[in-house]
Image (cartoon, rainbow, N blue to C red; front, side):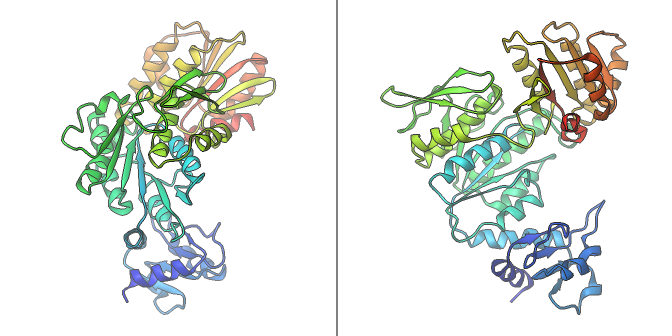
Length: 440
């Protein structure tokens, strides 16, 4: 029996897998991962003391320790064990990737599929070279279907994640500008997202293509195992199309049945940009024959969390909290959606830096300021972060409606000084800005 098989046997008989001794539970298998800024090998003894069923480490000092397996590289071992586990599974595995919307689509799809199947989905944003293996190792023999979110910041990463997850079905939620520092160009972003499609094509998998993603047009002409759809043309037996009735404060929509009957759905999701996420999730759910009744119930009861398009009452104001992630595409969509909201309330913007844009960062932040400097739909805009400060200096323009600060911790005082009350506030920023802490 080789080490990978031995470790997998322990995992299957254990309480799960952990890479963090702070959250490690007794009976879990602990992988001591080593990176640029952390070294799990320093916590092997802690894992043993906390009752780990097995510890996987690359530190040879533990070669003679009980309940410890020493390997050449703990991360590669984690990935290889996850791949070995995946090879033993015989269930549909749905791969999701995209610049924006993949996590919301995943959460929605998980709810929809979970209404009729024992479904395992990626937890949180565990969508990278560490998160995907951890997700795969959570899949049990009792699960009937799995949804695996895949993120990437450079060319080749989706292809690698596909080699681990081996999806049988897949969907790209969107194409936009993000992680330019890693990708180098929008063309490389498209190329990377299409790695999911090319994997499915090579392995006779099924690809769902939302025709609203114009950047992918003409990418699939040489493959027949594709379901092409849009909100207005579902091409299915259960739902013929979807239509949006209202977008504020939450999305209200109709599921139109083949006989033209309409099923009204009131959601707790804010923002027209989330309509495509709903469409994507419903299309896949419809393919797996989730009943219209269950689709309606799950869409109605789904409440977003983790600062993703949440609608929050705060100190007499209404917050649109979208502080989990921000890139040029998602920020522009958020601003335009906010601009189009018809309300008698005063509007304020609290926008944080878009991170990981590399050489494109300054220009992209300048574009946002240029768009907003002459718009009249908001009273004040508060801009947080070094990138927005650089953009302000580059433009060399003073605008009374724009306030710039370096840190989120400075914003609460500004809100109090402006005496903002009874207003509608859009909060949008990359996670590293920690904009949500303003309102704690």
